[in-house]
Length: 188
Image 1 (cartoon, rainbow, N blue to C red):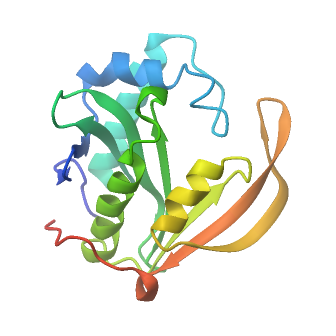
Image 2: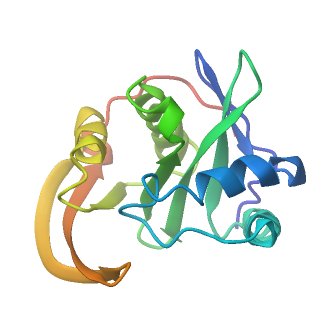
């Protein structure tokens, strides 16, 4: 298994890097915003949740369970979100992708930039053959983000989740290595 604790994925405006204890306040703000979590989960109520999250992510990264990176603005050093490859299957060479971005950073192309770097890493370094995304159909911006990367909608699952007390459908997207267009050369 890979250890992902040393990953640094630079882009033009961003640095994708492992979470640090000093990110707790930014992570807490991200995961307490109901608009940010509308299609993802229930907002946190305590900064302790952020500390626990960062500790668990650090452990998961060191054991190669998944890749969850902070999205940091190069210019200011401000953490504006997270992106991840999870449910990694070495035997099937597949993973799922996820991301979350602070509302103040929406509609500026940061998710597209982050996903490009993360997918390059997944296909080039982890030798993935397939990456999947599960998106709520109401989250049009997220669907556009994965479609811009070449993902294709492969299915629709009604009432797949119960999120904040309501049923939520899923659009299932997939990106095969054969359809992926590398943007960068990534070193491990």
